[in-house]
Length: 390
Image (cartoon, rainbow, N blue to C red):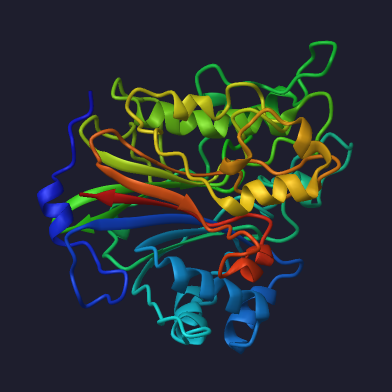
């Protein structure tokens, strides 16, 4: 059993929801939010950040000002190494209170390169040609599309961060190699040996809480669709999730090697939170059976707090369609998709290690009668948060 994090140190440095200068001894709020800012052209997000007037970013800022997470992972936030995205977001959006809400600032951030849009030089999508978004290491029209940005009001330890952008899929024990209906491998041996597991990346970023580290395990697996009978995206999604299962297993994972050449999984006494858009619903959708259960059912992960919202229930009823045929609890949905083919699903998670005291969790999805309902549709995903402390 994993030993608890030192909550005395953790609680002594928690940040107030209202001010980064005023410590509070009750909670740390951690959130994930797929903001759907993976735009069509390189430089689009940079221009929107610089303008200070982008309507969608203003809505994202207001949601953050309302929920006030101390740490938040933004998925589908294009990575551009030439632009200081965190500073632009802070200065041009978060620093300006929206509709009476207090500004918020994240003085610490982490970002790194991702696989989306990075040319592989291989025919990974099986169309007989090399080049284009389907042959990138992760689907994308340009490098950095659908990237990630981690924002924090507490100090991060970037020098200790680990990234797993280049880890080969074939080196994951029991890797679900895509196969054609006749059993032949979809990728030839040469391509399979080079294929990267992460469609974006897997990040292990420690946050410094009064001298005690809490590890933020961030990722955004590929959606398990947009492929063929080989189910290459479904299998990749399953194994991208399984990476964290193995990485956090107290039994160890000596085979894992990060982009910096360091080997092994996370230490057995380490406190962590796995967060992101996992593109995996426990009961519905096109995910391989058991994909998200790999984490929800792990003995060293506490998945008992299930974020829910009134807005999700209302949407499932009013939108109808395939939602009426789903078996999962609609209150737990975190994403709103086409109601004819996909419906609303639970895809976004903040999952703590055992030993961390969970105070609560939720989804920012206000019902029509609730304040902030007009903000919900800024993305097809909703912000999900988890409170830890005492």
